[in-house]
Image 1 (cartoon, rainbow, N blue to C red):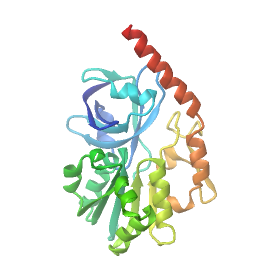
Image 2: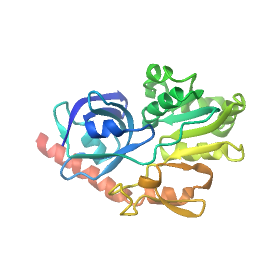
Image 3: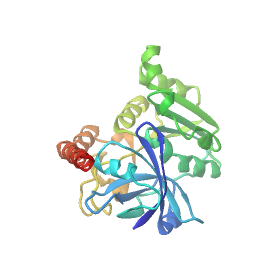
Image 4: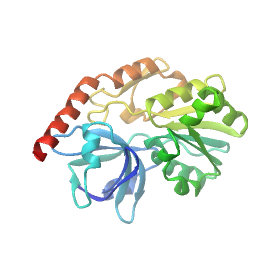
Amino acid sequence: MNRVVLSERLVPNLYRLVLEAPEVAAAARAGQFVMVIPDGKGERIPINLADWDRERGTVDLVFLNLGASTRKLAALKPGEAVEGLAGPLGRAPEVSGSGAVLLVGGCYGIGGLYPLARELKQAGRRVIFLAEARSPAYLYWEDRIKKYADEFLTLFREDCLGSGQNFKELVGEVISERPDIDLVMVMGCSYLLFKFSEATTGSGLKTLVSLNPIMVDGTGMCGACRVSVGGRTYFACVDGPWFEAGGLDWQEYFNRRKAFLFQEEQALARLDREFWKRME
């Protein structure tokens, strides 16, 4: 079992969890993820690595408190432990090159891209970081990311609504004003990944998205995380999580993400009932 060192709420519905995991910390690479089991009755859920400390043997996770499993994680206190943690998993993306890299993070993706900003900067790349959020109240880790980002930009949904510009136009401006960008990497909710894929289609820019499908074992055996890219089938847990956005079958990806939505709602309702029963 992996003990909790720190648990904190970063912004509404987003939490940071620091866990003891020396073997994971020793092998971690930017862009990878872990599988976490909150308790003995919990499911395995993939969460991007947001940081690690090899000397202390800890890993940082940033996650959205949305369902039953993440609610259990958010409720953990220092000294308590998760049932299990496996990783690091997935293929770490290549960071070598000469052009600038546009990192786009939304929600938990802001934290998940922090190690990648650090690794890209250390590799000599120019890093432009674009943080997407509902409003300034949902922005976090700005000072931390600015240590490695040559530019730190923000895109707030409330500003998009007020400006009259659509998402594609705003993204187009960011890219056209920085002709040295030769790679775009996006991490966050499925909607953000899809919208950025739309915005960069036809630009000639290589766009990689970090997919977060349903996973069961995280080793490629179950097939639950399969995705279609360029007409071929891949497993996100072992072949990903990074894939080229242009060739992804987005409709299939969205459909598979929603496959167990009813069961997820039931699990959350059961957790609520158990909570109120304990309060009686």
